[in-house]
Image (cartoon, rainbow, N blue to C red):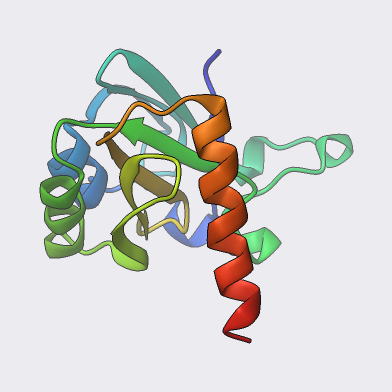
Length: 152
């Protein structure tokens, strides 16, 4: 499966993607740009996965999709497991990403953080720290959310 993310009109020339390129090693494999005009479509490779980006001008009204810019938020979060989530997150922020959720240890055994790229797409970088059973995750989830409710 290859997800497709939308690009808003203000960003239609698809500049380099420094946070994604530097933090996650993304490579732009293809860029379909009209002469003197907008980028209509691009294909990226990140690790062993692909991501497509399409300009909103290609969108059909019945599809009801859009860029994070036009819909007022992201409709998906792209998650990538990396060897060192702390380092990947830091590289992304240094390259201009906006931190959304700081790197932290999660109840399900991963060390994880979320950042937004310049287009508004959300990215999670994670490193597996503990391999837990479903029962252990469930118990930790109950503890985590009970603690959250108690603090409100």
